[in-house]
Image (spheres, rainbow, N blue to C red):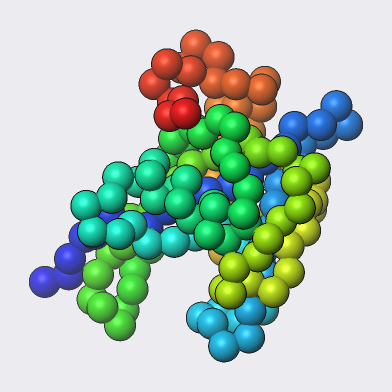
Amino acid sequence: MTDLRVGVVDVYLITPRPAGWRLLVLRRAEGTRCTGAWETVHGRLEEGERPEDAAVREVGEETGLAIERLYNVTCQPFYLHHFNAVQMAVVFAAFVDDSIPVLLGPEHDAAEWLSVEDAVTRFVWPRSRSAVDEIMILLGGGDAGPVEDVLRVL
């Protein structure tokens, strides 16, 4: 039987600008899984860790940035055939200050702030593109509007 595990987070880092939002994209480093692929902050939950705590930790480890506001956006399943498991990623949107330099962890070798349109085409995973669509629908006005009370974590 195949297991279902809630075990990872995806965190999309956003800086709203008057000319349009910018999203941070990260390139996987040599010697890591998916070398050369562009993605968002992605990481595993540690034992006993809540997804929102993992999101904050992973953003710090992978970018050195501090989260100003954090929103719970959706969940996305994907199959890991090596482990015979369906992994569930809890997806977050995090507003951060892009004037602070990004300090990459060892998993990535490049980072770029891109427009929403450019980020969507750069992301390798189709689920990233759909997550950005949901983020724009829910938060495109700058916050979650009438659902702020249920989506905002920090």
